[in-house]
Length: 202
Image (cartoon, rainbow, N blue to C red):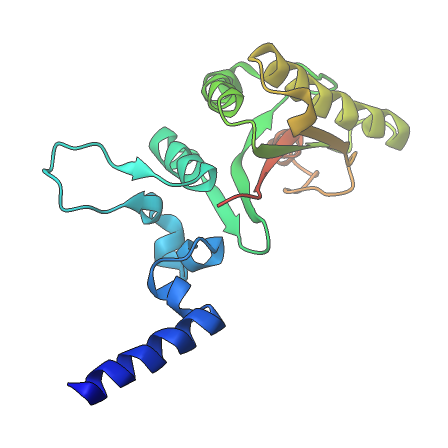
């Protein structure tokens, strides 16, 4: 028994000095709870705290990141996760526009409205709004149009009470096409705004 006590004393003191003991107790380092592979990244339940309580109890979501991923999944909005010091979530569903217009196409309104409402309640999420155009018109016109498209999404978010300080807009003109500009379908694909979310908290 004397040797067991001695071993435990040495083990606990070593763990405490190195920080290992904190990790064993479930330390608060957000990288410790981040998804480790593609399967977990695609599974919004990784951020849900599991418990032995009855099945009808409500799970507790630990972070804005987990809530964002769960919301996008529940809404059927496609996304990619870019891990790093701050978790970044790129929305693959783009917001569409008509030719030479900065007004959001009707098909994009429903999910953007739901997303705006969600973001208004999660001000710690930074929103990067990237505007793009097709090659119709001059370079100068398209540069300005891409910025106006990004600003139109900012206004839409602000109308839903998303904090202005959480929103950053950029215009890329026609320089980063997602599809070919040689067909009408491809040009429609390029008239878009893309969203990127940055979550810098555990």
